[in-house]
Structure formats: C-alpha cells, structure tokens
Image (cartoon, rainbow over all chains, first blue to last red):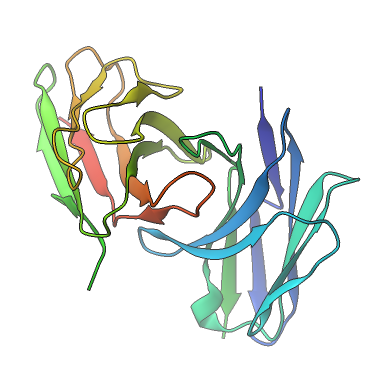
Length: 112
Length: 112
C-alpha cells in the first residue's frame, strides 16, 4: 500500500522566519510528488516534482525531491501571515485515472 | 472563468436519509474525482471517473454512489449505508492522467 507521511503535523512561526516542511513516501511505482496549499477550503496547486535534485521555485516557495532517500521538502522563506494554511504533500501514482495518495498535511501558522 | 463548483457549501441531513452533493466543472476536463477529508487523515478517494459514462470505486466507496452522465457533472450521493458520513467532501478534476488536479471549494456535510 502506497504511503505518504508529512512532518511536522503542525508548526507555529513568526513572520520573517524560514520554514521547511517534510514529506517522505513509500510507493510501489513512483511517478510524481505534488505539493498543495489548502487555506479555508480548496487546495491550490504549488509544485509537481518528478526528477530528483531539481529545485522548483515560485517566489518565496521552493521544493526539491530526493528519489534516493524517498523524500521531498517544501521551503518557505520570509514567511508572511498569508502563508498560514495546511500544506498537503501527495503522490500521483500516474495510472490512467491519476489516483493520488495524500499525506496528513502540515498545519502552518504564521504569527505577525 | 473556468473552475469547479460544488454545492451546497454546508449540508445538514437527518440520519437515515440519502443526500446528493453536486460537482460541476467547465474546464473541459475528462477526469473527475470525489475525496473525503477527516481531521488528521488527509484526503481519501471515494470515486473517480476517467471519462463520461464511466466511473470506478476509490479506497472508501462503501456507502456512496456516483453518476457521470455528462462530462461537466459528477454528483455524489451519500447513502444511509454510510456509517459515518459527517465530513468535508472535495471534488476535483484533471484534463487527463498525470496532470495536477484542480479542486472545488468543498461541501461540509453534517448528519443530525
């Protein structure tokens, strides 16, 4: 059974701090790892990672995948209160229907 | 603007009643999905549909039913057989396989 584990489950920081969210996975047929940001209700897409060692970057957010050690990290630099959200890591098994295996999520709270 | 619309946002039903959650997308996506989110458990796949008039069970399909008569619509019925239906339900869609999924805003179902 495919498994995705995120850590920590919750994190509280102050504005300006840098945070690193972790995601480890055990899957039978790796295709891609995705990061989503869920605030209020609906998750929004952040990154899709398929190749090891290649950093994806979008503004203050960046993510990288290590396929040898089976993990990914999501970095957020100079955090802002608007970064407060649940961050979801999930594996896309890449079957024809795109079945996803979700981690539990990391709840990030950024205080002013 | 293209997107996914779930309705209603909040739904209350008495125990023993069937209830149908709506999901409509105008993204021209082939694939659609239903997830259930419970606190601390991430998202779990209920049903998915690769193409109109076709759908398959996900990991927790018992007590649920779906239909896909139109490409744009993928309604989910929570039947009285579902033992613990109170949860947050998310609908998603993707163009084809190996594409990130887009999510609706969700429906929170509470059984009285």
